[in-house]
Amino acid sequence: MLSFDKVQLSYGSFRALDDVTLHAKPGELVVLLGANGAGKSSMFLTASGLHRAASGSIRFGGNTELVGMKPSQIVAQGLVQCPEGRKLFPQMSVLKNLMLGAYVHRSDKVGNRQRLDEVLALFPILAVKQNDPAGSLSGGQQQMVAIGRAMMGRPKVLLLDEPSLGLAPLVVKQVFEVIQRINRAGTTVLLAEQNAFAALKIAHRAYVMERGRIVLEGDCDSLMNNEAVRRAYIGS
Ligand code: ATP
Image 1 (cartoon, helix red, strand yellow):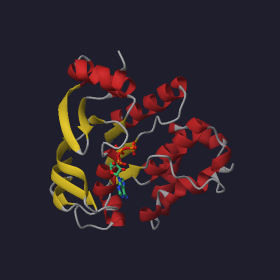
Image 2 (image 1 turned 90 degrees about the vertical axis):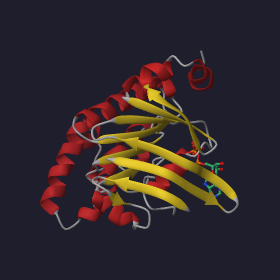
Image 3 (image 1 turned 180 degrees about the vertical axis):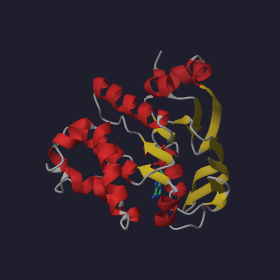
Image 4 (image 1 turned 120 degrees about the vertical axis):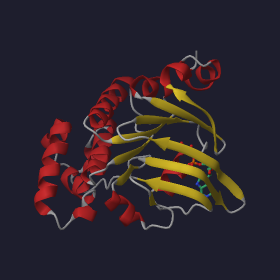
């Protein structure tokens, strides 16, 4: 569904992605673990066409090459990113923030209305707060707006960049339950996280990234029991 093959990315002389090879099969929920600065966001920004890979290939769906494609074309293909830090427009209403995610489908008003109903059913609190400024919501609710906005883009593959950042454990649990529901309803998910314990509990497979390289991959049970992973990301 989505595959990175030997992807390299540099910021000036600094190599942020070094021969990154990774894939997510249709219907999978794959976790990308890594500390601050490992390169997770760089991977997502490269897949979304916001950074240009120096070399390597990123293929989507059948065999579509994403490197060189415009970000709007990539979203229209069905690869949609929910960025780290949510990046909402705080003065705008929840509804307007959600509808921004449907921009590439703006000519399909009926489809967008239907999709909005689905997103509001997924996040009932957003239906209640749809006319409130997004910035007035709690952190967890704002994260739901950010995920809901990405869902308005009708992803086949959803890239979620650290959705648990800054949230209390109970809220993290709620957000991860929604991610699992989205995945079970058919959307392939690639989830970048530092919260390894919560992420490994809901995922099918995982990769570990360090300093721009994939250093480990495997199923969640084996990574959960891996001593180095436990020490670095789980803390026990
Ligand atoms: P974080 O959770 O902190 O965002 P990350 O795993 O997502 O971590 P990246 O944001 O991809 O990591 O950053 C990877 C490396 O690239 C870091 O060393 C970072 O400082 C550097 N970096 C990221 N963006 C830029 C940029 N625009 N210019 C220069 N260096 C950058």
